[in-house]
Length: 406
Image (cartoon, rainbow, N blue to C red; front, top):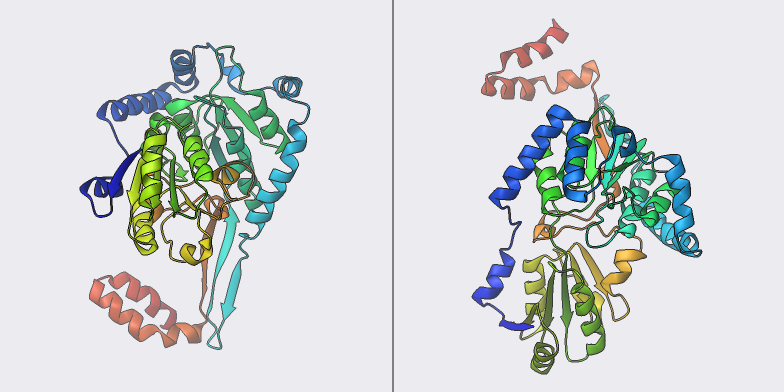
C-alpha cells in the first residue's frame, strides 16, 4: 500500500475521481442500443452469442419453469435455509421505509398532499462475470416486492451452456420474480428500456454491472428510470493505534478480491501506516494528524463502504455526511452489509455518495402531488397568482383563474 499525506495532490486526485467514460465504450454501447432498437430479439441473441459464447433462440431467452425446477437439483442442501434469516433482515429494514399517502386540509378549503404508488415494472440486472452475484438478487428484488412493484423481470448473462447460475435462479424463484431472462451486458439493458417481442419494456432498471452496463444505463436514462451509475467497488477504513490490525488487514484483503476496487486506510498512527505499507500491496494509506482530519478525508472521498474501526465509532459516525454505507465497530465488516445485514448493498460509488444514496424503497415508488382548492380558497390567492402570471407573460394562465369568477 502507498502512504499519502493529508492535503497532498495525490489525495486530491482521489477526491476528484469519477466514472471513466472511454470513447470506445460509449460508441460500442450506442451501436448495441441502436441495433436492439431496430432488430429486437435478434440483436440480443447476436450479442449474447458474441459475448457469452452461446446461441439462443427467442424462445430460450426466457428461463422456463422446467429450468427453475432443475436449478434446485444443483444447489447445496442448506442453501435455501440460509436465506431465511437474510430475507427477514432485509424485509425488516425496508418495511421501515414504507410511505403512506397523506393529505391535509385547512379552514379555507385547501387540500394538499402526496399519493404514493409503486412502479408497474422493474428490470433487475444481476452480473455473473467474475462471480455470480447471488446476493444482489435478494438485495434488489426484496425492496421492489415490499414496495409493491407488480412486475419484476430479472436479467443475467448465461454461461456457455446457456444456463444462468442455479443459485441465482433459486433465489429469484423463491422471491417470486415474474420473469427471468438469459441476457447480459448492454444488450440486456437496451432490451429492458426499449422492449423487444420477447422482452416487454420496464419502467426502471436497477442493479450493478460492468462499464458497458453502466454506460447503457446512462444512455437509456429517459426511456426508463435507473437507480444509479455504479462504478468499481470501494472501501475506506478509519482506524487508529487501538484498532485491531488483523481486522483491518482482513477487510482490506477482502476488498482486494474485486480487481478494480479502491481500498483506503485512514489512520492517525504512523506505526500502523508503516506496517500496512510493508504487508499489503495495492490501495492507499492516508496519514492524518487527528480524527477530525480523518472525517474530513472520508467525507471528501465519499466512499461506497466506510468502516469506522474505533473504540467509539458512533462519536465519529455523526460527522459522516458522504458514504453509501457506514459500518460501526470492530465486528461490523463491510462483508456483513454485502450479504446479511439488511440494507441493500447496491450503493453509490466514484464519489457519487455526495449526492446519491443506496438503493431504497423510494427507488420503486413514485408520488403524485394532490391539490384541491375551494372557490373561497382560490379567490384568496387570486392577487399573488395574477401578479406572477402577469410578470411571466402567461396571460392564459391568468385567464384560466379569472374564468372561474366571471
